[in-house]
Length: 398
Image (cartoon, one colour):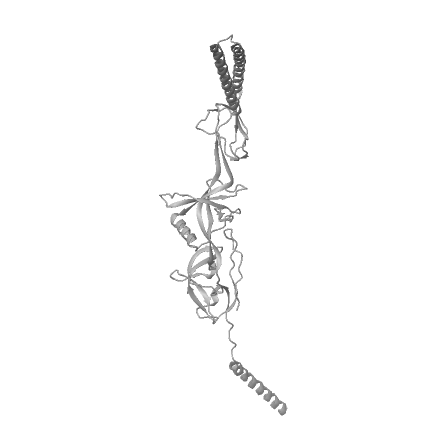
C-alpha cells in the first residue's frame, strides 16, 4: 500500500514537471514571418488611345418640308394618319377638283378652236402660194395669208399652254408629300378653305432616319485639336471610322454609331462656340428633333498614350492625383501624376509615368509607403464606354 502510494506521488510529480516545461518550450519556439500582402498590378506601356470629348447637342431632322396647297380651294379629305410614316408622292389632302375640271374643259375647247383656225389659215396660205407661183395673186396677199398662219400657230401654242396649266392645277388638287419621312399633326381639317401659296402650311414632314445631331464645342478646344493634328501629336481618324456615339438622357449609350460631317465656320459671339454636325442612323425612331443629348466625339487618336485603370488613381489631401508604384525591390511608393480625360474606363496619364512602370490597381488597403508586396496580374474587365474597342491594360507577374 505504501509502495503504491509512493508510485502515484512520483507519477504526479512527473506530470507537473512536464506541464511546467511546455510553456517554456513554446515561448522558446521562433515565430514564422508574415507573408507580404498581395496586390494586383498593371505594367504601363504605350498604346493608342482615342481623343474623345463628351459635348452637348440637339437632334435635328435631316430634311424638313412644309406641306402647302398649290391651288386655292376647299379641302374635302385628309388621307394620312397623324404621326405616321409617309412616302414621297403619297396623297395627303384632296381639294375639291370640280372648278379645275371645268377650267381644263374650257382650255381644251379653246385649244380646239385655235387648231381649227390654224387649219383655215394654213389652207389659205397654201392656196395663195400656188396662185402667186402662177402670178394670179399679189405678193401682198400671200404675205398677209402667211402672217395669219403664223398668228394662228401662236394661238394654238398659247392654247396648249393654257390646257397644260389647267391640267397641272387639276393635279394639284391632290396635295402630295414632297419628301419621305414622319408627318406631324394635321393643321387643317376637311371643310377648310386653303389659298394658293398661303402663309399657313397644312402639315410638316420631317425625315428622321438618319438624323442630325448638332453639337457645340468651344473655339479654343477646336483650335487646339487642329494644332495637335497638324503637329502629329494626334493622328487623324480614317474616313470610314464611326466617330460619334450618342449618350441618352438616362446615361445609356445609343446603339447606333454616327459620323461627324463638318464643323461650322462661324462662332456664336455670345458663347464662343462652334457647331459640329454629326449624322446618326435612327432606324427605330428613338431620337426626336429638338431632343437634348450628349455626344461622345472621337476626333483623333493618341498613338503612344499611357493609360491606367480608374481605380489605380488616388487623390492626395491637396487634391493631386497619384498612383502606387511597385519598385524593383518589390516595395511600394507613391508617385504623383498628371491625368487627362477618362477614356474607355481608364485615366489617360499626361505626365508622371513611363513605359515599364508597375502600377497597383487593387489591394491598396493592405499597403503603406515602403511595404514589400507580392504582385499578381490585374484582371481587366470590359468597361462599357463610348463605342470604341476597349484598351486593355498590360499586366506582368513577377
